[in-house]
Image 1 (cartoon, helix red, strand yellow):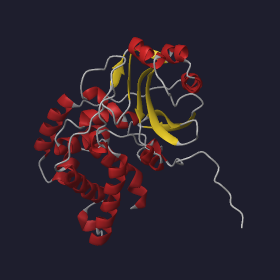
Image 2 (cartoon, one colour):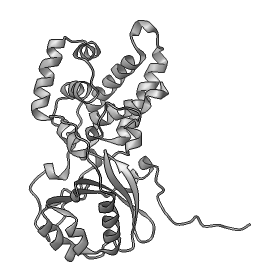
Image 3 (spheres, rainbow, N blue to C red):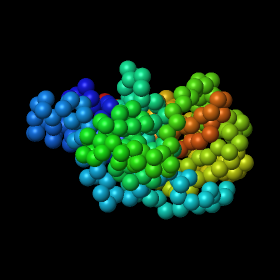
Image 4 (spheres, rainbow, N blue to C red):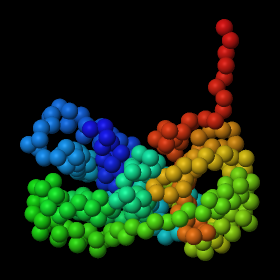
Length: 301
């Protein structure tokens, strides 16, 4: 079963939009599968595990609130506006490292299928429509296979897929990331070089900082906010490059070397179109990153 961990985690993550919950769902799937025992009469092992994982996710989604990105919660803020009251972790689409959800050997599944914006769109679907869209359009299952998993007809699957596509269409496209852009961003970020940071942004770029519902749109508003920021943790900070949600990301450590945020970027050609600064150090273990960059204190005796 272990060989299916990454793809099952990716499936559960698309369903739940939270990395910790996805890992919990896969662990519960393996526990249930081990207790039940597998035999060939249940069909292919992979399909059987997906059926168990689907039921686990559907159970977890009962009564759960819809997760979102800040840009989906309300209009953009004006420069100088307050951040607002923080929302609980369950309110947010949360980031996930690529190596836990994308198998490099899998040439079928697109990295775009774990982009934050697509996950947020999936959240608008009823759970079973979400299952159908992910299995059919992302993982390329046949309609008959999905029908068997859900215990329904191919006609019902096709109908559900049409409704789901109207809400959350999936059009995979591979995006080339400009490494020079990322290098310039890191340098400007750590030096709090506002001119360069703003120059790297797309005209309609957005920035947000969960758990706060505050977000900004446009270079002018982002510039004004950066120019009036006080107590910024960016100067002399450390950014550790990561890959998350099918794109570039960074583990942001404050000037004292303490875990501060996971930053995810969306880029288009040579510009940054979105930054999301996830202000939750509890995400660092999920990304296999230490909570501090400081050397451990050595004691004698």
